[in-house]
Length: 125
Image 1 (cartoon, helix red, strand yellow):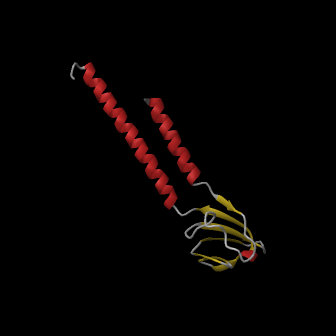
Image 2 (spheres, one colour):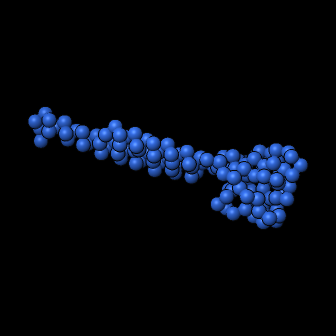
């Protein structure tokens, strides 16, 4: 029972870790929009501009000419590199919720099994 519990905990931690790993995005050609799977509104990004300046912000709009955030529009042709620092957390909470439901189900199943086993040991039916 302990081994099963530790296995489930390990799987939950792996799911959460994989869901929160930063993503590195290949910059599109100038004027192209990045794939929606790569960057989303609400993501926190770190951009190194072609002049060497580092800018970090939350994406509020994805536009054909660049990304819009609290510093205004940063054009794709001004970007040297782009890293997604923090994804919007909607997907992470779904993973955590599913993992918690599975863990709760395993715990309830084991508790019922232990209660039935204890009832048998005490002479009850």
